[in-house]
Image (cartoon, rainbow, N blue to C red; front, side, top):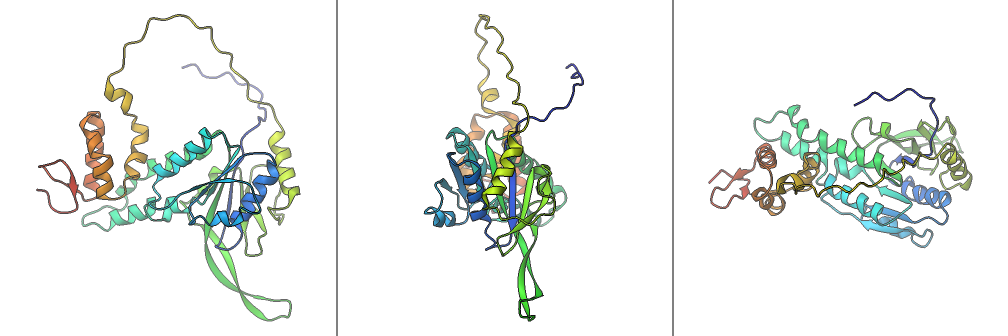
Length: 320
């Protein structure tokens, strides 16, 4: 493949990729909804709700659609929701939140810790099963063709501060977000929200806010972000090449059509128990590629599953 020719760098219009992080009760959901509605007053908003449909409490204040997502919080289920929002023609997607994908029931960290507890397990080597899955999740966020706002719950602590009467009172503060380290690098803007519902940026590639304290529901904040998004050139449209009639290509073998190794990690990750593994993966092993069968068997082995040679299913007990 030829090396691209150097050319003058130009800012192009991009889709917003933003995160809002803070402790429970800091107003992440409200702030994300308010900002989205101020940015796109007539736009279609879809919200993936992992918090027991709590976002719907704000349905009287904001017009949006919701996708309730309960446990298990496997990456594959997140990817299906993102795809549904894209296919649904939404202008902006709010994922509230991406913390369970990492540290919720069925999330990557929970499954990794479960694997680490098994006798003879190598905690460092076990990451090989989960890092590709998390990379696929990050790529889905970055490459989705719609504006995306993610919330992340922060670890929290308490400090003593003086109130207006000079008395020392405890104050809840947010610390690092509950997600994989350096997840904030994947976003253009990251706002850290405190319990007063105001916050400052911890990452800002727009150069708009510096260390300024902001209220995400302020329409002026949306106006400034929108101004930055609108600056730049549209991505060039590559003209379609003239269609030349070609003889029909030979049909690909079934296993080539069905198997995409890049998707296997998410496919395996969506099956968080031996029962779901038997229901969703084992039947596919009958007509998938040899590479898929080997990969599935390796995942089962790492999870401690043992094959029942009578029916091909897996169990948590000894092999039969």
